[in-house]
Image 1 (tube, each protein chain N blue to C red):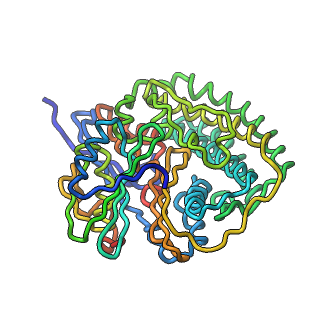
Image 2 (cartoon, rainbow over the protein chains, first blue to last red):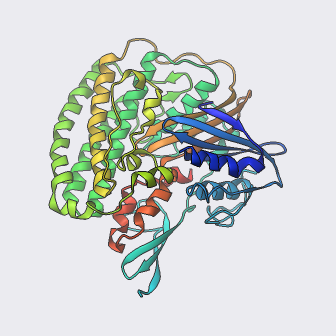
Image 3 (cartoon, rainbow over the protein chains, first blue to last red):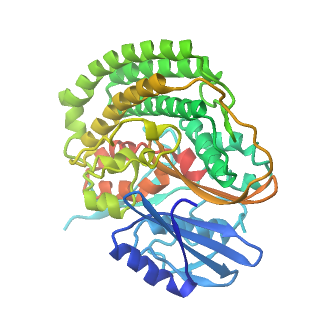
Length: 110
Length: 359
């Protein structure tokens, strides 16, 4: 894996993102992966060329908090994850409510 | 107090070859906010990885975009090769570098033409695309394709470029470089062009960082980052530095892209001088097991390829974070405060690729 991986719990997501912001990192991407019991999420941040990935595993019904108040571009990644995977994310700054992508089948990657 | 109104922009618009919609909140003719709406052409290509053999998926990855098709294929291959601990031959690394830089020249020339067309300079548009046509001819000559090249594979390249072909390309690049110098005088010096590009669409260095921008869009705001410096393909053996500008307006973005074309000529010359003889691929046995996140510098900026494999011929997940997806928040920022008439040009200055964005 390119870069360091930090495993965190859902409750540490916002504080972890705040720490990244404080340390001068930029948001690179957010990625969801479907697992048998829920989802894996990678939040990737970079400072210069150094990549750090915050990794968390959540259950199907776990609701996580958006980091779009901390990293503004996160709203697009989070809306994409909501649309494609059905991950529950609250407090997205610009919430498309599952309508970022105009797709026939809801949460096709779930 | 001015009256606020909302003007819909797109998804069909003369300057947009691909669909994106913006709700522009205006005070008189001035944009105060823009709300994007995408998702008109979502294709679900990432999901296809569950049905395609990991070798076959190279051809799906190439089809994410018709302009960066080589680099999408290469980025995916490099990610899987890292998972499988496959070291490709040196000649293949140099071939990937040369084809990547040809893609960058082709993409930037295409963008320059579209920009010229958007501000109504038809002859400049035609001259830019005339030059681009030569690169497409070289692609056709070396790969057999003009849009989709299908030369990447897990473990190297499917085709080689003989040394005499490479040398003939160098001669053509020398001619193109002279033509581009003439074109540059118009793009960066013409009064009409300057009046549309200078002092509009500013993005500061701090905004470029905070909004997660990438590529020439980011570098034209003064951030000297270029993912090629991470050292994939043969880039560790190539001497180059990121092209930057500190101005951060539309003119700076044009300036940076034009100079990146000159830089690509130079990188290709270095690569051709150093390319070793030998094989262009190694046999790959077994199935990938593990995960990797690969970063590649496409013409529009950093692209991220995440691959997760489970030891079978089908991968669990492929995720592609494309440059335009990362640049959308920055683009929205450049629109704030601009005149309605400048919106099409400002959208173009991030070099948007919606096909990539929606995958």
